Image 1 (cartoon, rainbow, N blue to C red):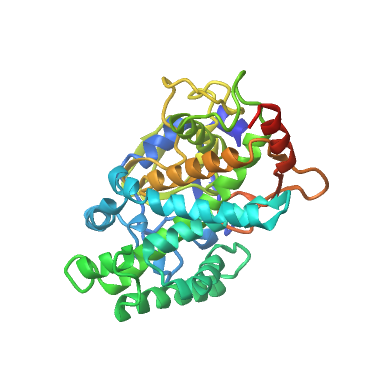
Image 2 (cartoon, rainbow, N blue to C red; image 1 turned 90 degrees about the horizontal axis):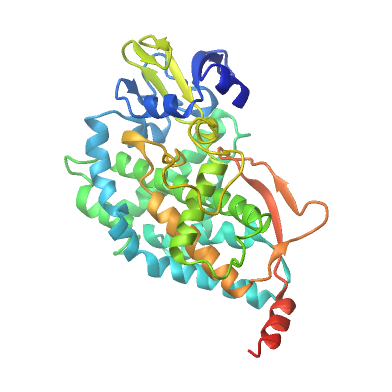
Length: 395
């Protein structure tokens, strides 16, 4: 699509079901679409690109703020936004620290020198953090993890997907109505403050919480796995090592890897509610739009050498679109950044000599979910090398 971007950043295309859409790939053009309220996110509007599971009739996620425009979107976002401000996320840091500490202790206790990073770390940390923040009862977390995982299988039919959604939504409703969720968790706070009020119905709350689960589990897992592969495949800056990076440096690296990988497939979708000119093209009212975040983040007119990632990208370059842009920009971005920074800081603090494992199947790219990622990533911890290095330096 990069070749298409260089020729025609707003081009005619078709969805898998044959529905005609405008495919928007240029950085400036994607940013313009996502920032313009004349492009609607309401999936029930005629012309909205619904292929691939987006906007399925009956989908619980159609009730979330991601599928609404103002003023409904404003009402919904106001309820959730206060839970994910930078200050609020700072309050979640002990939860993140404990999840990372527990997972890495389990890795250490296993005695293994080659681990399956995705399964043992990248899946475990986001799940535990999300469960704790939500207030999922400990004895129900295994069930919840299994039920939530079914939401991401792109091979499911529409009927199978809706069944999986219903299962998770029914479970969340039961948490709200029975009060089983832990009192200080997000589910309990939302239920106490908004359920049954003019702010939100029980179904809306279930949809909000489900959306947070979708964002909190799968996307962070895939980003973390791809990031680890990139980190172990690239030499650190001269004179530096991965166990010496500061927190601020890790956050910068993570942001750059967000730009580079841009894991969301199929980008945000919109439908024009009036005639709008984007770039050199006039998109007519009622025509659907599919944006590509990946190509926008790799646009050479916006980023220097976009096909590579940098340990210290020039701050004068524009903000990447990995978390979206405009009204629907990801609320969980601060939480995702802190999870990733904590994992990498603690992992390389314990295993500074870690390398990619060798052999067939050590790094398998691809995903069965709605986000790009890896099926597996084997990492060699090189525990003995760390001990040798410690002895050499007198530790």
